[in-house]
Image (cartoon, rainbow, N blue to C red; front, side):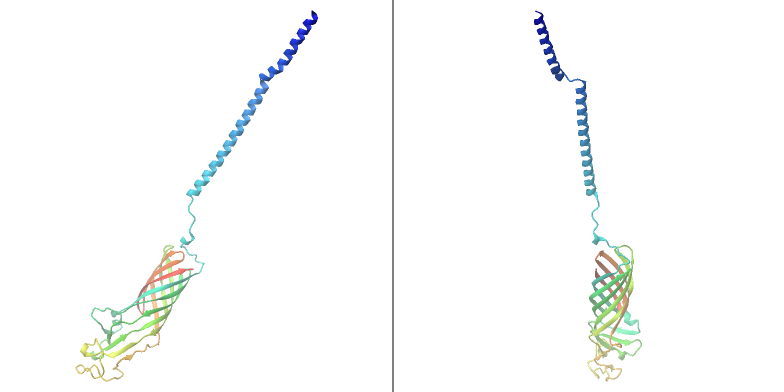
Length: 297
């Protein structure tokens, strides 16, 4: 009896000892809860940090992208019109000039002039040709080889002011010239693209063509040439050839060349880093007005 009770007690003790670990596994204690809560906190902290770091990267990316979109476009070097005063510039271009000698200009030198009615311009021709420019510190030195006409279409009669009526001479002029000139032009800049220009030009012209003098006829009132000596009896204008009476005499230029000296004023327009346009006018062998275009190296 005692033995059976002892075995029964031993059996229950063994059951209780095996059930205790199982119960401990099923019901987590304070230590387990602390472990789990720490793990969750670490996981949450790590996830938040990762999200926060990702947010910073995204914000930086978006900020850089916005800066790129609103940044000023890259500056076009060709749009820079300012010139370095220490730098020398070379230019290759062309010139076109209108050359005018009005009637009153000849008369201002003590000559009387007869021409077709309402003809106020004795010379009105266009010249042009290539040119090469050296520019530094606002000074242009321009060498040019160009062609210009200096003649007139219709004959014009001249005589010295106060001379007798039969002193009229009928002059035909088909003179042209090849000009070799150098211009020295300073410029005062108002802006990078606009400047006032002023200076002078000089050179020589190689004449082509002739100026021909013939006694004028009284029958034409001095507007036409004598057909020959002795063919104008009423006014006796067409007298025999002499030092004063000439028929189809070619006039020789005193120096054999056409002297070229002029004063110029105008404007300079810098339309591109590599291009400039000049509009100028002046006075020399008559009046000048024209345009020049230069490609700048």
